[in-house]
Length: 369
Image (cartoon, rainbow, N blue to C red; front, side, top):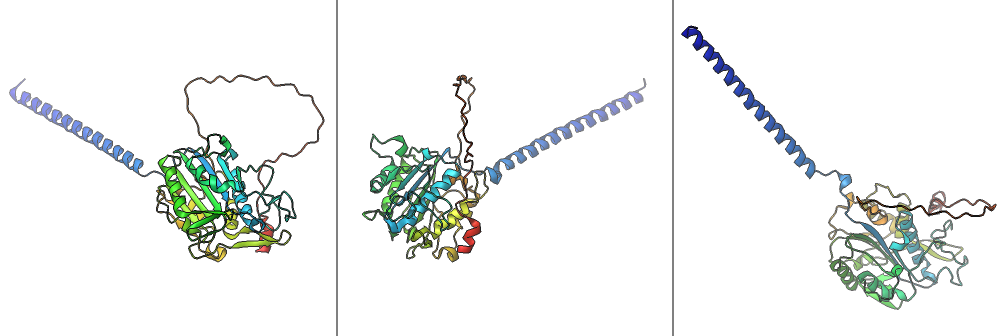
């Protein structure tokens, strides 16, 4: 081989080596760029969480429903609280996690032309004081036990069914109805609780880790004054009237002879009748259920203590219930329990109650309103 041919071969080898090195360089750069791109996408995906996943991390739901008044002419307040009671039960909160406090003297009042019944509309379609109502506190028990219930300072012999057994994962719905004024709420026309006392009770709950979030509803005259003193976190509050305004009744049942429901609660129930356990309705929709043209009073809302956007909070976070799931890798033995033989008897078939009837006969309500 001549020197010229050897030099030409060396030059070709050098060109091939440089070409291969350049290819390796660009391959490494392309791989590095792809990794950077994938990392950027992952980071952005982690930051931008879809709205449907922006939900509460609560583990259980409770409801405290209180009618603070008594006597026959306050029939509507019992109807208010029993209607809310019926709605939260329909949406999944069990009786074991509902504390119902009412005066309990309307159904058996001698003036009641429909003994053992309470209705929330003039057409008397639904008896809200039905067979499945479990009253936890009644009559003059209310004032003494209301604050004790919230703070957990009940007597040691109090049964579990009359305790608010909440924890730091509990979302609590608190609904109050009755007679109130600027900064106070009357209990049974004999005692009262002030807005400061209520605010301090809620702060005790927070310090004791007795709630995750609270939705506070109050339907009274000058109702917004009762949440003005609140200073504990994670509380969303709404009221049927502002300071200086009255909360008005909706309509009279001529057969019963008294007003049977308040305006604010009436429109709240009308909204809740269209809510189901898998509903996508939000808390912001609930807060707008009763405009002034319907309520004749201005509905108050306080959001500054609540960390989440009500537009992204499902209404079922407070009016519904979740079922906690425990994940385990341990085997679970399910024993078959022998079934007892029952004598076959011919019985008349009775249709089972499989769903709650609507509280309002909508085809008749329009004619009344």
